[in-house]
Amino acid sequence: MDKLHLDQHISQQFNHELEDIRNRVLAMGGLVEQQVDKGLTALLESDGDLGQSVATADFEVNAMEVEIDEECIQILARRQPAASDLRLIVTVIKVITDLERIGDEAEKMGRFAVELAEANAATSYRKELRRLGDLVKSMLRDALDAFARLDVDAAIKTAARDEDINAEYQTLQRLLATHLMEDPRQVSQLLKITWCARALERIGDHSVNICEYVVYLVKGRDIRHINFDQVQSEFLSKPN
Image 1 (cartoon, rainbow, N blue to C red):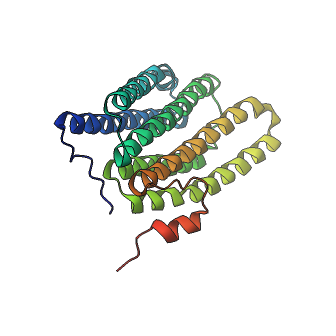
Image 2: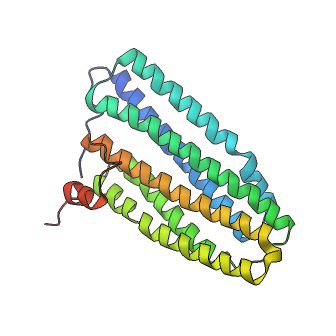
């Protein structure tokens, strides 16, 4: 695994500042993970109260994004970092943007969970939605873990799982379309479930972004528009 030397500055205060923003990102990531988990649980268990708590707690994620962003700006102004230090600051700003957007998707699931619970929506979709949700939660957790450990191999392997999420999302879309044809009276509820599935799929996309930022941070290479087979060939460690 590649290591960055982010703790070898003459100024111990600078070391502390860099470590502090990393820890803040991980704390924000932990909060976002909780929101996604609660939003999914509210959907699957028709728990309107839990859904409402998720929908109204998004301000916490937003506040953390603002605070971390401000700290990054202060470090840029005071320290004028270069090389890996600058990449860390840039990466943090990008990661918290994706985390905030994941929080928005969790809020969306919370709001729809409230509406679906009030409407006593059909539950035939739950097995497939749970499977999609479990894939997405696992991917988000592993993306944040790759960031925490600066692990390029883990980041690339985690990003590759987006194909599984997309396939599961398409399966759920076909199921919901079938239900809609069988009972058009459920159109409003089924559309909300479709939007929730879309929210989960988008969380997977944001998790991929976080993985790409890990590669950028460690390797100094922007891989966002590079063929994924090339990324694996160039950056994934070869077994001994």
